[in-house]
Length: 298
Image: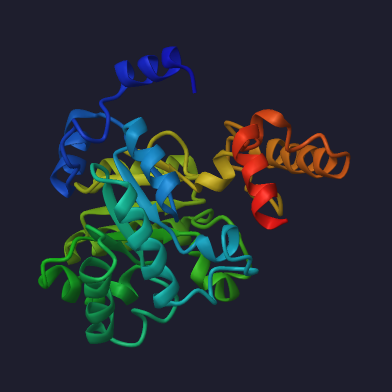
């Protein structure tokens, strides 16, 4: 990156070392002021550092890492140990953004006690500031238990990827009057249970806007229109790094998969044709030392 580009970026956003740590209170204050909340996923140190430096409000260590990093077909196989491993890497890279750990499948569904124990691991072992879990009224007890222990909880309604078998696949939710009513009630239940914010995924824009206006906690949309209090995307989708599929609601800000593919192909070609490494990529020994070496081994 050129000096000019770095200067321009720095002028738009404070660097991670100079800006204050984003908190759950900052989320609520942004909603009250009508300022959009920005959120992206990260799963490793360099990505987290770059996103943090850009000035993001929050980074989600999403269970989407199952698909975009680990190559699973869906989010169900990823484990607590895998999530914590990546959470620690992100925590080392991002110092200002609010860090949210995504609780994986079966880490909170069994009972509230197990949910609390695993949520605590995200803060104690993963360096996270908060956790996210999927589901509405059926997760209220777990949310209350976790919040009661002083751990901030982000809810997640609509298309909940850990429930894809129950939902019949990756399908938009809340499209009928009865489904919309239930989703709205779930949002209110999560608010009452103590969640500090709420992800709304793949729900009709007018429903997401209605929920956003009628709950006091911030809503973060993904495929839920512009009426939410903030937006989140999977970084690999945004960068065009995940080529298996791209959800309809994603805007690609780059196509890095193609860039990487070309770079790898160019490298292979230059190695095979012996154009790499060139003299400028090579360490040399002066003639005097070389002659001395040859003399030594004779």
